[in-house]
Image (cartoon, rainbow, N blue to C red; front, side, top):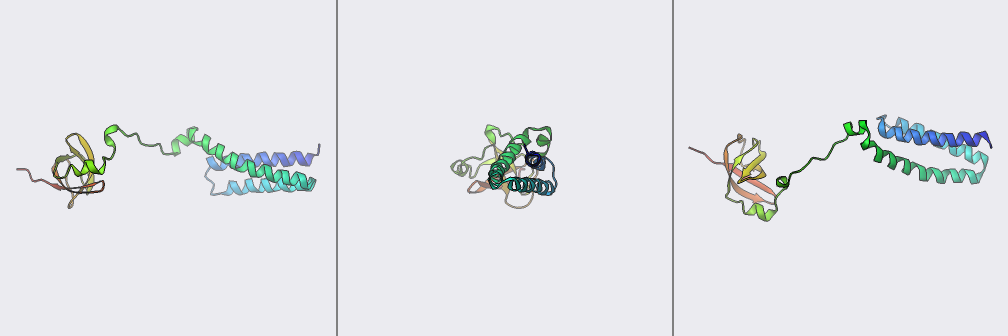
Length: 164
C-alpha cells in the first residue's frame, strides 16, 4: 500500500475532526479553513495517485462534510459545554397560553389586577386568567385595578381605574 494514500486518508480524518472542533470551539472560521486545507491536500494526493482515486476522494468529501457537521450539531447540545451555551426552551404552563381572539373580545370592559408593572406592557389577572396587557398611557404600578378598553388581535389595552 502506498504511504501517500494512507496520508491522504489521515488528512480526511483530520479534516473531519477539525469540522467537529469548529462546532465546539468559536474560532471565527479559522478551524474551518484548516479543515478545508486538509481536505484539499487529501484530494490532491488522491488525484496524484490516479484520477479515479481523486474523483472517489471528492465524492467521499461531498458525503463526509455534511454528515460530520450534522452529527456534530446533533451531539453538541447534549455535551456539558453545549448545555451551558445553548438556550433551553421555556416551560409553559397551561394557563400561560395566549387566549384566542374571540376569548379576548369577551374581556372588553373586564376589570382586573396588575400583576407586573405596566411599562407600558405587563401581565394582568382577570378572574384567574393571566393576560399580557398594554397600558393606555404611561406606567401602572403592580396591584392597581385596570379595565380593558380595547382589544385588537391578541393585544389588550387597559386603563387604570381610580379607587377611592
